[in-house]
Picture 1 (tube, rainbow, N blue to C red):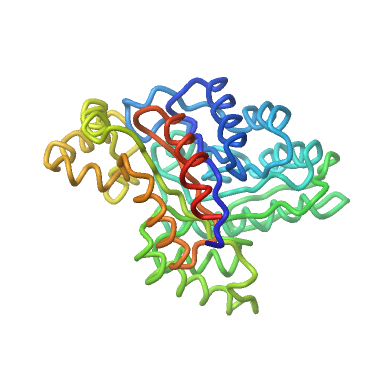
Picture 2 (cartoon, helix red, strand yellow):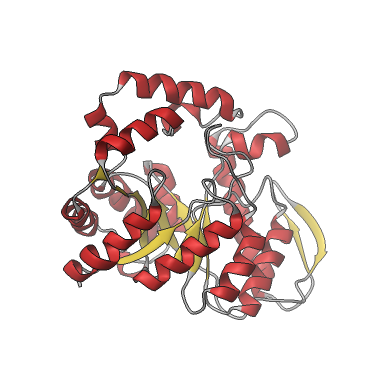
Length: 332
């Protein structure tokens, strides 16, 4: 199975120091990289933390050497000013060259709307904003002189990064639907997603290839990364925990909802209507590592080149141990 397997600490279930220790355990167990989400507010109110990803990376990269790291994902242009984000990433790459991956998305209202002056823009406007941001980031990372930027959304004079990147920083565009996947191929280096193997094969890959064609690139040039939640343990206990915490992300309807408390109510209502079997299936809850191996194979067959494993319920160390002792040896 030709598939990189990295670990996603998520950044919303444990205090920051505990996520560093979890990352260390994952790397020691054989995971090939570490990723984290970047939220200002959590998706749902029951999640207890949202630490800032970029100072966290400084500690992680000093204590967990030699593995790639990345954001899954950050919105690079509303909560952040793109030149300051470029500076933060350049600083990390200057200290730890070639390890940082920038996963980016157009943003959800819960993270970005409090920082946007005006009515929350629709997806297409945010996507065009992100295209311009990519251009600005690359300009600042690659040009060793003062530059001006006068675009549709950003207007800057006399910018220069004196602490510059040492290596190319790969940009991974978060895509699910046809247009976002095409934009990933056209404007970014790689694609990152969080959906089923079936949707990846039927929607993500074909539209990614369309965007790549527009740039004169091929699928061989890119990584296709997918998040994959895995929760190994006693299924009855894990399902009960998911119900108790209201652990469900109703992203299909709540992307424009800025309030995690309101989103939590939607999640609770949906969970109440789901059977235990539906919850277990939705969250990849299992006590059989063989189920995970089968899903990893489906991902690889769909065209995924890297999977980010993360656990949101139960003991994440139990899932990591299962990968070390049963899953990794079976797929080598």
